Image (cartoon, rainbow, N blue to C red):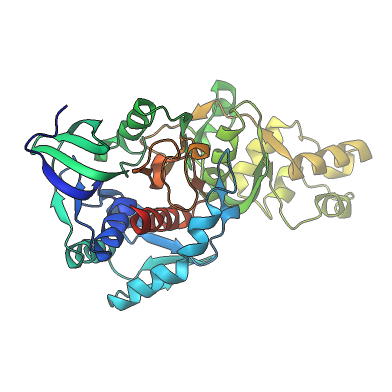
Length: 398
């Protein structure tokens, strides 16, 4: 690839999603000549479809503890230097109305389009050149600069930022481009997997619980170091709902071999509750239906052999039932994949990047940001905050 006759910029940002737009706007505000390139025809599609169309654009409580990575401290620096309050200030400066839903999650009062328009306006104000749709055929290096081969011609830039996201939702343009570039320049990639994703049942579990699609309950779901108390939802193929999506990231990170553990009665002393009804003639399913959806209570009791009235159960049986209610192990057979995942677990190995600038330590001028890198947030605005923070960090340095 040659740079002869190439368009010249200080910074080329490939990927016009949340992280890419933030990076381009930040670099442009430093009077850098910035080009933003994206192969997809629509701007900020992942922003548009997020949060039910209202965009859960950050979480007020975001810290490095809300993210998974093989290098868990990596995200600390960027998150500390561009906080949720910084992004909220930007939102307020643009007059966008928003509200807190639960647990620090901030959503637009109106459409997610407001956040897209805000970031586009920030890029325009910073003088960012924008090529979209524009395919990138390859990336090379020549005389200390990067050369990007696009269908609008070659681009030469001192700094190259890869913000092309990961594999999530391929129908809106997701590709493994970032991984290919990383490997081209000798950077390791942590094998990607779908995360924040519904889990599937095997044939046996589907036989027992497959007809419960649409049934929801409050539960505490744990896997490895992750523990989440939120809604659990049965689907035609397995389990979903916020608690399951959260736990799915930890299940994937652990190798998808261990079961997830479900506490069906969080905040309830199941042992004392069952013992208090020892003299009752009612069936366990009838008692559980006081706190759990009736159909689920019946299916669960059948699966656990709880068919006798409480008055006929032994102390050992009461004890076993209480333990099972507090720790129901469920072994998923898999996930619904990238089309249904919120984010991608894994990505460019952050041990090869500067935590302050997102620059590749061994390749000066090359940066990776956003979902492309091995930093995966919890559900609830955390992944957008990582996009803003990592994009800002690279934009301040590139």
